Image 1: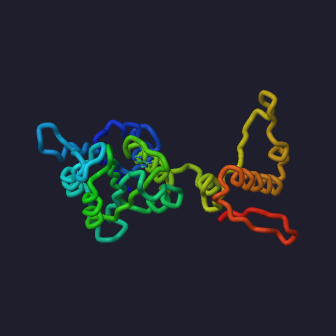
Image 2 (image 1 turned 135 degrees about the vertical axis):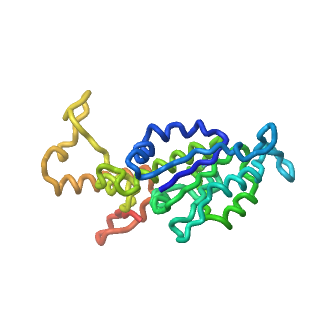
Image 3 (image 1 turned 90 degrees about the vertical axis):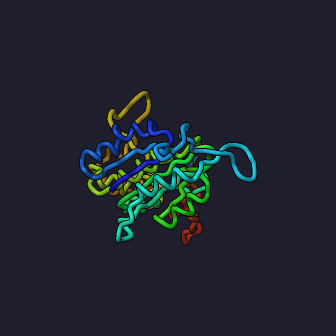
Length: 246
Ligand code: ADE
């Protein structure tokens, strides 16, 4: 996989070298490039924004530098998989979740377009759809100052799914938001007692059947309490309501 980032704040991406993607690059699983959008400006002030047509607060990112950057960075592979996927990080995009992380992990080339100010001129996105696959992605229902932090978060969620990246593939299957749709059960390690808090006895029983049942029960309870939207209600024959993951 190749990852490219287009931004007016390339310094935001320094952590890539240190963290998970840096390790993946060392293993040869991916390559990444960080690009200053101002490289593709031609005026003395390296201008990337201007006032919005129609009026209103703030500034809008001009289309020309984005267009020239895409001309250089977008790859038009012969198969769908080789083609670039441009990810515009924006609060008005589709919500980012584990399903989308899994989808993006199948792509050969992700190009993150990180907007600032009031957003990017809409013609950039319209143009991009003609040269690449385009996803507009939101990290959540809140507004950040720009798309850089969102691009980093998406990167981390995607890169850890690449085959050969995680040491322990089983932990990918069990963790929150994996296929089962439940939040993860609580976990414990040594010591067995700590500051008056005990590790639940069942986890020290050695009974793998009981342990699995306890963990499932805890996952369901936690999900019902914190994220009831992840569960669909169902009712047992005796009338006891139960919850089932969607
Ligand atoms: N840029 C600003 N806010 C954002 C958000 N919530 N998600 C993605 N990109 C953003």
